[in-house]
Image (tube, rainbow, N blue to C red; front, side, top):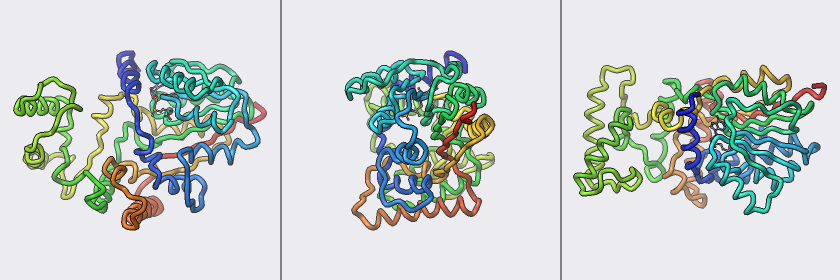
Length: 369
Ligand SMILES: C[S@@+](CC[C@H](N)C(=O)[O-])C[C@H]1O[C@@H](n2cnc3c(N)ncnc32)[C@H](O)[C@@H]1O
C-alpha cells in the first residue's frame, strides 16, 4: 500500500472507536450464539471476552502464562488488556499503524496498572517480527487490513517458538466485502423480517449507491445547510436533518430507481441495503484488502490449524444501531426476533445458500520447529 493510503488508514483508525457492545462481535444478546459457533454446543451466556476465554480454556490452559506475546494491529488495546486480566502472558507487545491508537492503548494500560504491556507503531505489511521470538501471536481483526496475508503469515510462523500458537479472529469473506448477488439478496430479505421498532433500514430510507458517493452527498448536504441557514462547511456530523429530508430522500430514491432501471445493479422490489465497499475503500483503503487469502495463507504456513466459523453472513449486515439500542432483553418478543434471525442465518449456511464471513482460527507451530 502506498504511503498516502497508509496515512489515510492510520488517521481513520486513530479516531474510530466502536462502542464494543453495539457491534455484531459483542452485542450481549448475540454473544451466546457466537460462542456456541466456537464451542459446538448450546451456550446460555457469554461474557465480553467470549472468544478469548474460550481460546484460553481450550488451547492455552496448560501453557499460560506464556513468556512473550505479540498482538497485531492492536488498536486501542482491548485485546491485550483482556488477555492480561486472564494472566495469559508475562509480557505483551502491541503493534499498530496508528500512532494515536498506540498512544491511547499505552495510556489505558498505564491507567489500568498493567506494566507488562508495551506498544509501538509499525506498518505490519513490512514489519519483521524476528525469529522464534514469541510463544503466542494474536491477530484480532488484524489480518483483513494487510495486503499480502501469505507474506505476513510466513513472518508470523517464523516469529513463533516451536510449539507456539497463532490465534486469528477474522473476516474471511470476499475482498473489499464485495458480496455475491445472492448474499445481498438474502440480506435484503432478512432486513424485512425485522420489526420496524428494531430497524432503521426501509425502502423509503434506502440511500441509492449514487447518493452514497461522497461528492454527491457532501454537495447535497451543503445545499440543504444553506437552505436551512446552517454553515455550509460544518462537519457532516453536526448537520441536523431538516423536516424535508425524508421527503427529499424519497424523491431522490425514485429518481435513481428510474435512472438505474437498465443497470446491472438494478433496483429490485424491497431493496433497502447495498454493500458499501466503494465508500468503505475511500475511508479506509486497507479494509478487507485481501481477506479471501487469509484462510489459504494460514493453512499453507501451518500444518495444525483449527477453524471455527462464527458466520455473520447475514447478521453482521442487518443488525445496526436501532437494533442495538432498542432491543430489550426482558422482552420475549424481541428475544424471539433475534432467535428467528439467528436460525435463519444458521439454516442458510447449513443449506449451502451462504458461506461464513467470520472465523476464529487457532494454528500451532510444530514443536519440532
Ligand atoms: C479492526 S481494528 C482492530 C483493533 C484491535 N485489534 C481490536 O481488536 O480492538 C484494525 C486495526 O488495524 C490497524 N492497521 C491497519 N493497517 C495496518 C498496518 N498496515 N499495519 C499495522 N496496523 C494496521 C488499524 O490502525 C486498526 O487499529
